[in-house]
Image (cartoon, rainbow, N blue to C red; front, side, top):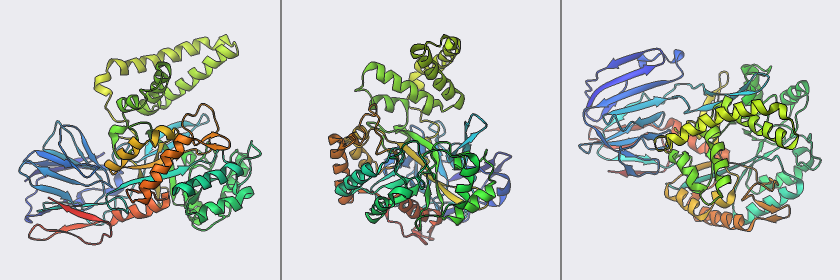
Length: 537
């Protein structure tokens, strides 16, 4: 059934032909990989028969006429042309199938962009996307099982349902709107991982902080929400004072595990490569404060109509974004598409800087009459136009290509800062709650058994934010209220699981130790999992 297996890392590629004596199990010899020398490797498995079906992220059988991918939290099950089921014994890694290579299964461990991190470096804070450092540790050596019937495991505590998780940035929180938000979520039965600033150091006198608004924030915890750090203050202190605060602050509560970077605070995880703290010292501080879940400062994309499930990389394409905004006027549609091409499709820092410089120089020319910037403006406009028109001219080829930072559906993964592992999470930007949480999007999420970790600003006051939570400083947007009411009903009916971020991470940890085995008759059994599961033929 297996023709050959290739094991390759960045430094070498070796070929192994297996003559396996076990009828229903083929164990892959990992002793050939020097894990100390590689952060990433692939196992290429060539079957004698073509792969006919693939178990999708939504727990349905799909054909192999397009690229198929299954990450750590998706079923790793396929069916060969003769009907034989093939399943992995562990959840680790990514299965990938290329439609042009129907006999080949790639079992990938930490391929490029599957576990991305943001590093800001240099005086200009240039962004660089790097791969997480991963410990290649397996609860059992990877193996292919050939069962009579397969087993798939639920990602959700409510068996085989969708998952919604909200992580809120507190940039615009005040004591007043915090209370209104809390009442709104309590009324609708929604739980949130709520960011807060520890210290009151802000350009806005009414900006909320734990220092000034402890009583209100404690009520959030009493209501079942999770509190998390959104850095230590809204504004940036001097570098010396910032690092001193970071090293010496005392956690105000037990079990505050999550840290969401805010702006360019010097002690941010995303600035670790340029700050004066060593990896060892940074890790020590996090460990002493009991912090082990960090944001990677990356959004898979921006939610809109039809863009809601982080596990479905076809939600994160140019065509899906265009469909989600087809109700907008032509000018606004073009404006958003250009921004989406630059920030999500290309996601190239030099291009993003040219876009920002172009916008800044345009304002200087129009509003400040600074005509000396007209030549840099024209050059940047031409460079951006060339990149954008190349998309237009090759539209049919690229329109359904997933954004590179969404291709492998990174949501939660592990990273080593120095010696110890922390959990990293990637988000879905959610600004327009009217579109994002529409009844059709909620149904899509339910039908796909999908997942999102939303990156939100519930208290944002800017008038140009369409579909925000507050229509006025005192009033909740009525259409947004109806969306959250429907979402709350689905959660209450257990059609959707709504964990806090730490609850989600704790539950998904179980996948790391998941081991399946098979008896001599081809019957699968699980050795140590408490996940919900079901059998399928």
